Image (cartoon, rainbow, N blue to C red):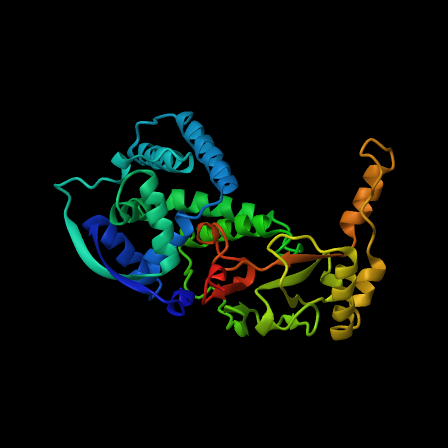
Length: 355
């Protein structure tokens, strides 16, 4: 999990059951990794599963249980063990975890260790632990048992299912347009890789983000984005930034365009403002004009109009540029949201209220 090496971490002493400690150690040894990497990966993978993924995994687990109940000799140890595991997973995917599920018996042998956790994983595990009135350590133990204390056959079944689900997400759509779908796909991929016993450590691509100073802070953004100059205001005078992304723009090989503004978060851009921005895009990347040329207007006729469906399909299949606001760390609920697309966000050094 090379990506974790590039994040700031916080060392914490944590008490694991001896069984869970050994499971994590075995997984780490299997992939020539470290316990720290495995624990961070498990929390990231299990504590941030999108609701749609949970629902599908719940149905999958319930179906496996029903299948096994139809097998003769269901009292066989292996079948009973698989049913028990799927029942535990159903409980988790149905959001029915209770404090009792996370408790460690006093007579269970324990092992203490020091682990460096990323802030995002501490936040995620703490958030989920609070929901069931338990501690970070106990909830982490619970996630370890769910992820690793599973028979190989069940791991294989889960991995095959998650791989199939991940391949069903359309990767041709742009990330800002399809952020939710991509999050779902990423979740399935993480689960599939982990349960397939393949090393997840080197699968994460790390990209060095670039930085531009802004008024009361700075923005970090991918190095392949095109920064538009002189659109609305200079970075040093701006408190907001926006990105232009083109849906269905793959064949035009369009980059993302970044520009700066002082509009309030969420304020719509007028048609004149949009045209001004698009002219700057053409100046920076001349074939952006092809995107505008090939674009189709959104249908305005009533949805009951016989021509609406065909017109809507033409519109949705055409290249559609759209302006999105970049999130800032002082936005309401920022820290309750997941990682912003591409890691692009504004870091406030001074609160806007202190101007």
